[in-house]
Length: 156
Image: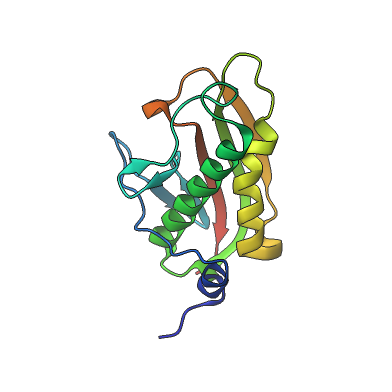
């Protein structure tokens, strides 16, 4: 069986999808209702380790935050694949909710979350154009710098 269009795009970008990260508490990592798939909050895991930890504007700079958001987006794509098995079934990335762990005074939330948004657009093309919320928060689970929730419309 050959790789689909989205899998080929990931390969062109040098991205090997990881196994979808397991939940760290009492919830599921991804759920589907009708043609809507929603991920739980995705962190920048690589294997069983967060690639970055800490607050943007304190422990981390914008570039590190951007990369953390990109890694979290890769994990979100892995969750979508877990839900539908074939990423070519993703009809539209509807929304990304992004949470940025911030030091006081940090205002670069949009630039950090562009790490996720730009990757999603590269991978899914026009179907990757999405709405987005970018929020700064004072504390984050596991001291993660970012957390993403992705909403996608899929087809059977």
